[in-house]
Length: 175
Image (tube, rainbow, N blue to C red; front, side):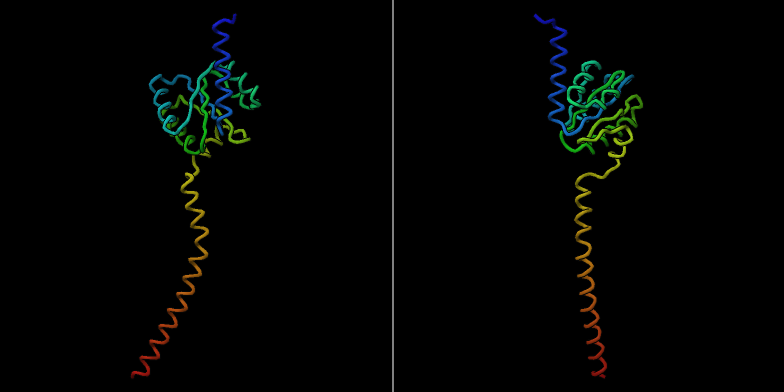
């Protein structure tokens, strides 16, 4: 019969592995000296963005990351750390984390991974500065639309010049 502690460690490790399989990216945050109400408000903010925050013992988190093939993240886990599992786009989550860390200096972004790339804190802050997906799509549409608008304006200009020329000919013949 297993001890209760080992059962709890296995369950936590399996939960982290499951979350890693479901997630497109993971961020590691350090929350030392962050008050409990502040941590709860961070969880609520991230829950609204369809994100899971999971806090586990460092040894359990390290073991789960190693077994999932994310050895680069193991070195980032020191002190009280939380794993932020992101299913969707990480830009909105990185913005929320950066905004929260500006108001709460005790929250630090340690790093993470996105797709197959390991990220450090600067990379996460760079992600936060990107425009949202909708803005990027609008920019692409405007870029694709620009040459067509230019062609339409050139063709309108030629027609406009023809109309002005015909109007001046009419005025000269009318005099």
